[in-house]
Image (cartoon, rainbow, N blue to C red; front, side, top):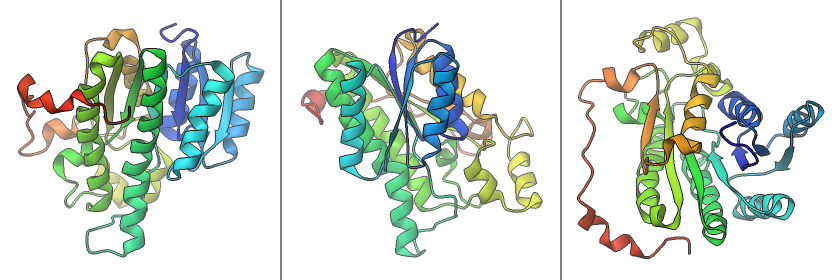
Length: 276
């Protein structure tokens, strides 16, 4: 029961990695608040309640600041606090490139980056009031290689997820002494609705599988276990990290290496919290 009696918000909680995380958090004793733009969340929450679990659904457009603010306020009004946030927004499933139509670029950046920024922003404000909390952002290991020539294309979706990685580093350092741990998971090709749409044909799916050292796509539950680890006290000394959960994709990509952290003096400017 790693999250016993913890209040955990999971965005994008009605399918794929989000749904797997909702169920795993609930199994580990969490009080779960699901957020999604799909009304299917009412059904998911009702099923959990029938199973004797505590769960609430809040219909939320994660690209609208007013909706995100209400999500955090609703969780606090009902349960008194927010202990964990898994910021898991949707991402455009088409291979948008910098030269593609403006609506594709905007959709990718709004869903992949802005939605994470907004949920982090309001969760951090609440966590500062209550003395701490944990945030896990959903990025993508595919950003490590830029996605160039990959089955899901490149461009805007990868720029957005790359932004989540760097934002996680910055926020993690900024709020560590406030008792707020912020990290990210970086899934690779996983059996979720979005990659299924992107894959399209059997040939594209095979191309995805061949890109992975394990030779198969990941399962949502495998990513959810990594999210649980980062959300639990087991990860108490991990700050600003982006953990690949990708079947070895990033490790096998040419030119990939871990960038050493900058010296502590480089972060002196971070004394003023962004979201205070």
